[in-house]
View 1 (cartoon, rainbow, N blue to C red):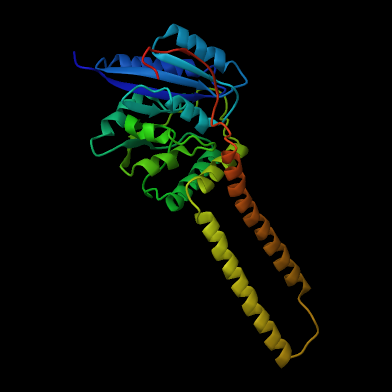
View 2: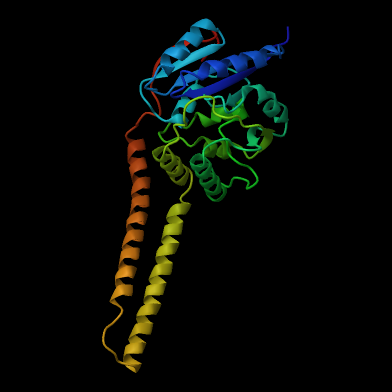
Length: 316
């Protein structure tokens, strides 16, 4: 009997006790209509403070396709996804959210686009139903990825995508803290495309996408796979130094040709405050790189699994 192709769904869960059941039900219904595929659903509780852990445990006991992973504490969405990747056993891995906005019923639009010349397919939304704040953060992250990791400009990173198992096996070789999954994927392959997907309204509650998480995402993108920010800082320093040198020569010449009383205190103070602020920002950027190197050298864990519940026997 020919082996069925297996799809592994990986879903990071946080404050989703009331929505994750519907997401799992949609996956089961969708896969039930395509019996030529086998599947598994890996739910990772990222230290959620509500009843999410209990909810995914019940799902795992109820459905043999579901594996529930309980992390020791909150490690962040990317780390939770990486934890799930370590347990996949399928041929293709599908990444989606726990709030129902990334519609599992459209998964075969992604899978059908994963042709022989493609390794990863991202969802391309017709109209995103996120808040303006999250959309803004996504756009900034997208532009940053264009310049720092060489992402094709026509491609937009989203949390809903499918990837070949070979890609995921390479991604999980990164065992340091602060994983940036899109960057890891782009480091593995450039055979990346997209497919049109309708983005649903959020079923319940509000997004946990806070300013702190937005800043963390940006810093992961800035520091994970490129030193270009440091090069920009160096170039900026040379430009400012050159401007200051030229301005100093102009000031000396003016004083020699047209002596006058000292003036311009307001502009001087403004320049000092601006340059002082920029120095602090650039020093902070360098400190962020050094701090992450220090934490990585101290073997800070990417994630810690408390327990796993359920799942099929062939999980690694």
